[in-house]
Length: 140
Image 1: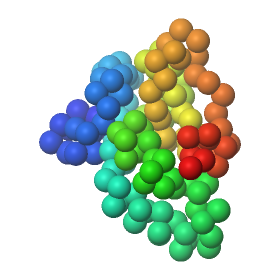
Image 2: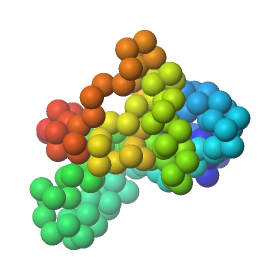
Image 3: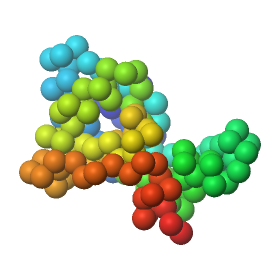
């Protein structure tokens, strides 16, 4: 799916400002033959909890899983405030141009994960956290 697929809840339930910024950036990126494919956008709390259980099983502990998957209560995906973009061209394009649209990579270990930071348009993206365990929003 792309950022223009309104029939898909993962796109349709994104925060409207995030969705608009993604679409504006995707339209500009198309001039460079880059398409913004969404691997994961909005997620239900149940799906987020399933992803967390799978991560605990995969990584062997809740602490290690927390480096990759947030709880439903803290996930920016559950609130519609984050998108994971697939295929390397889109994240690479956003790494160079995303701040102009307020789209910022938040975690160094997740080059595909972008969130809206409107202040980035004027001030650039904030420093990235190494992973979600450093993000104060994840401390609940």
